Length: 151
Image (cartoon, rainbow, N blue to C red):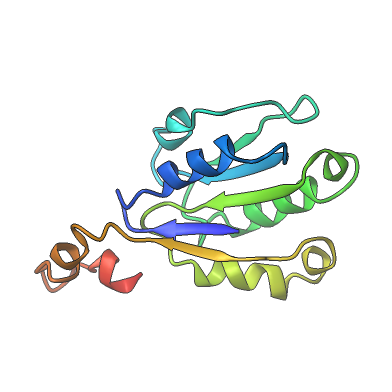
């Protein structure tokens, strides 16, 4: 699945819960960091190696929904092809809190080679119910985008 949500909504907390309660499933995580500093992968608490490779794969040179989409495709193709495919039960993609998930979702259907190897089985949008209205109603300057509203 793809896990998305606004900054601070609890995406990494959900991911940690998923990894801790995986019931023996081998889960590879593609973690998208927008900035140069990797924060979220350090917060993921249940890391294990899959076939000698990293469980958490960082794509931190841009947003998955735009500049690193080709990196995402290449990474998914690598994970879904032998020999790695035999050692992974699921791939979870956690987007940055600024990402529009639509291009990520369409990647699974538009890229023919990927569509033959992998299936998107869900999109989970995490919402901080205590603060969501505050973010949605936040006044922004005319040239600024309310990212929470856009998501």
